[in-house]
Length: 184
Image (spheres, helix red, strand yellow):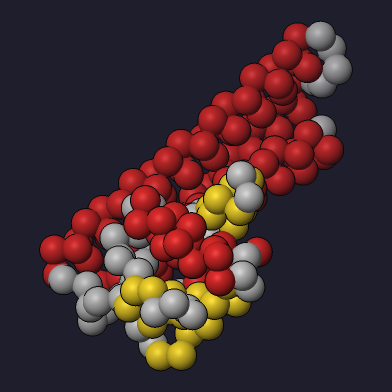
């Protein structure tokens, strides 16, 4: 039973990691290179992450500068950023691409906070689904005689404690990110 508990706890941790990496791509008014993580550039017919086609620097708090290793990629990078849901128009000076992050409006901050909350709820649903799968596995094991009734009760209690701990971590992550977004 211990290895099953460990396996389900690992799955729940993965859900939390996915949520945290999603939060890293949310734009909070400051330049954060992680907002570019999901953007792919057409590099000789292959969709390639921006980080693999040039240097990314943050010279100021609200600016990202992308210097491609090949000047021929400037247009492709500019196109990829324009087609993304980043909401920032790149400026291309022939050598580098600059992304200037405007201050977030109050309305935009509230929209981002709602989006963060929604992502947090989705992560909680994922964790609860993993708990349900664990409980179903334990019930099957009890039916086939691999586990006693007492072990079944113990297993469901332990998986519930792990679930509660994960939900608390998700709530804390949502609260932290919302606070970061709402801070002017």
